[in-house]
Length: 498
Image (cartoon, rainbow, N blue to C red; front, side, top):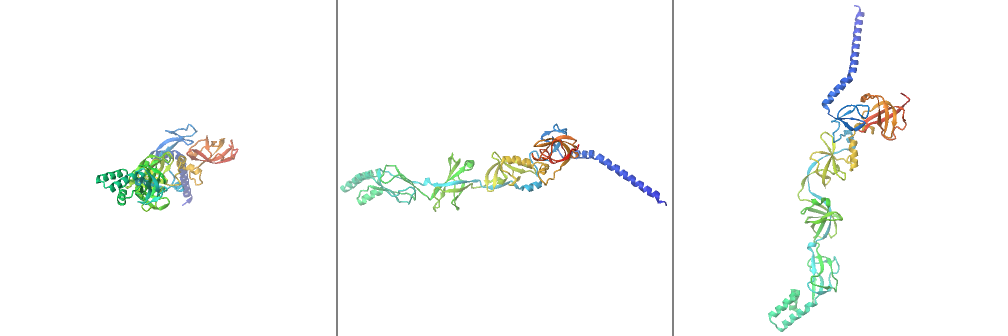
């Protein structure tokens, strides 16, 4: 059998197959843009919702339908609903890790209703004893002669010489010696009682027959002389206060409550006070009353209570650290205190939604509960909030700048970081104008973005970037897309090329 016809047949068959394959590939390549675009439109239309169209060079201007941009010679680009929420942002997990973003759960806990404050000890005025004179006389001897002097119960305070007592006592003794009847003696006794001569002194008069002209005033309770209003030799009149003795077995604790916490304070709340001089000394009590009025100087409300000082460890005027709390705890929502951003006008937390987006939420905050802060309104139990010190910045200005920056596209982040993964584009063009912010180029088409040749301005990464280029030069340049438009990343002169 002659093999040449067989070889020629096999070669012809292979050539035909090659031509057929080439035609199929060419046809496929020719048809793929339209087919791919149609499929993408179909899939996108079914799966992704368009929020609006915009010109990337003017991202703040939104359009409700596609078309040509009124600002540039290019088509408007769609913004999809799943790219970012209208009131939130999405942060790449890698960026979250780099930022040290940490989350906490809004919890409902039993937190005692209370607050911390400062208090001072004072004399318990309700236990003060006043030493007064009921007769007209003279201070013959002053036993306690200095303010704040300690004095024991029953100790003498002052000795009064009372000249008005001399005549009625002598008259009484004369009636007794003359044997007058009992009615006259009773009348004499009544006269002495009317002159405030004590019964004990009358009894001594009956027993000794000696006229008593001195009265000794004594302390009714152990304490200190909180007031001393006379000196030896001074004349006193009925009703005049000679001294005031205040006990130290109980003291008043006056708690200074900030005006912002005034509505939380109420009688009956328990108080745990710690001496500033010794943190191991604790004293407890309950608020007896809230004093009316706010101090104009300190803007504080005062609460008063009694504390036991039987051991004498405290003295009036001591500074105390006070924890005021209710007897029964209440159920309240709390978040870590570091999760709250306080701007001065409002308080915010960053909430992570079920869709992974982060949204700033304005909240009303209550008191501090240890390392947590009570949330009065704005959150619900179980929500996730950002509780990272690296992420939260305590100022309104920072808040306004951080959120847009974190919500920026990966292209913007890539342009400022060496580890960028956002796509970049390159083409050639002629420099038409250079400003500190932009470079205007008449550039060639960019197939990856479906751009035809046009003249447009590109942003510069900084005012002094690309300082070696000049107007009129032909350059090859690279750029990336950011939320504020397209930004140049490379500009290289090509010489006088067309």
